[in-house]
Image (cartoon, rainbow, N blue to C red; front, side, top):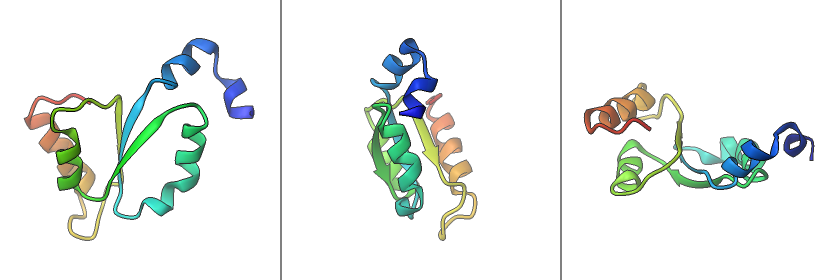
Length: 92
């Protein structure tokens, strides 16, 4: 695919082992983005809330976290998650 050809083999191999936590209360909004990244071998776990994300992060490591910035219960949800992660020393 075009996306795959754009990456050199070193980057592709690293992506193929990557695990991402995707936090969004409406994950259907990101289907195409996830499919493109999954084509590179990146695996995902989904969380619909800050609380669920923190539960998934408990004792587990992710290479990256993608979060929407606002959810109905918290217009700053992405920042709230980031602040909670940093307060625990998590630098993801």
